[in-house]
Length: 271
Length: 262
Image 1 (tube, rainbow over the protein chains, first blue to last red):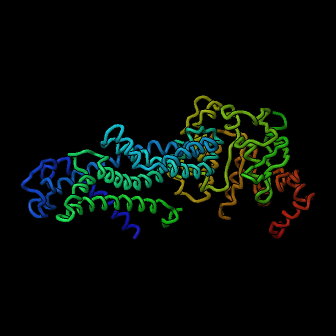
Image 2 (spheres, helix red, strand yellow):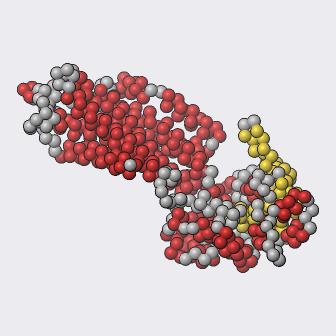
């Protein structure tokens, strides 16, 4: 069963990646071209999922939207990892007041609503993909810092770190050789879960007009456009909604599956 | 270097944890001569592990001093402890926790050679590969183990890896914290014999911490008995075994299962 979840997660993530890659080379129709005479077509041929209120092919937009969703996920999660993991390691290795300062700042950021941060950034720099990525990334830093700190504390308490210290290995050596390799799997699991949250956040921001501006199609803006035709063409909202749900589900299942796979208590055999 | 290699004077260590204060060590003084094989016995919580951490310079005493080979260890910053880091090496109880699961055996064993602090104490051009092969041979590990990871080995093999790592920088003192108590009974004798042979062949000074008097009897010539943070009895192995002076030592001795002729 756990195996199945992991594989379903991998399959869904692979589907999103495939959609994004395909959209780089080919889409059934031009995802930007407005065709007034083809407005609101139901699913059929040649528009497999129909067209939206501007007469743009929905499948083509979904494919291009996968690209944006992955781009925002990768950049924001990378930002959060690159900043959060070293901060957590610093807190875990230094302890004392350094740890207090880092973790309290992290608590403050954690308590600050990501949406508010996005609105602030959008107000200051204009709504764009970049402001959305920065807002999501910054809001995700504390989660990585916490996971990294918890893992670091565990590693620092082990005898192999004591042995390394008794061999004169300095704190950089301990961080690089002992702590980082041992917390990397934890950070990987966290990254997968954070990716799911980032996709959802990006959709929410685009839906509110705080993310990627038109005409670039994203799943969030598609959802917003569909809202105008909710009673006449409800399927309009179903497609991007389904895409968001499946992508979020995929990354969550992947994260859960990886965690179970890496947790020695849940893994049979070794250790 | 005369008659003393390690000296501890009036060591006290207090662990403060919020409201609770634990006196892990109370006014402990001790000297260890070069080539001596000292056993520290006592039940868990008696301060044995705290004492060896202080002797190895891995923790700082609340009061008191530690000297190594005439140089004071206490109060020195880490960067000035190179002499100690090269000369004092540790072997731990649990060979599952004492080896980094994500490092290859070769990297684990040569780690002491790679630290800047230790390198300054060693001859300029120690060939890591050659030294690795040497120490692996000394602890009877086949050379092909070098590229594997710790989880592929049994407890006894892992403890040999840990001993090889400790030997790599050619230390003067080997401190072993319960070196065999996590091992299968069948492997204990092998590891104890290995330690005995190594100590004899390279004139190492050995400090063994154990709750098991049998282990200490097999490995040591001097015994210190600890109880609630103090050394309550200290003397040669024969004297402590044959003529224990304190009731506590008698109790510890009485806990050893007796064998015919033993």
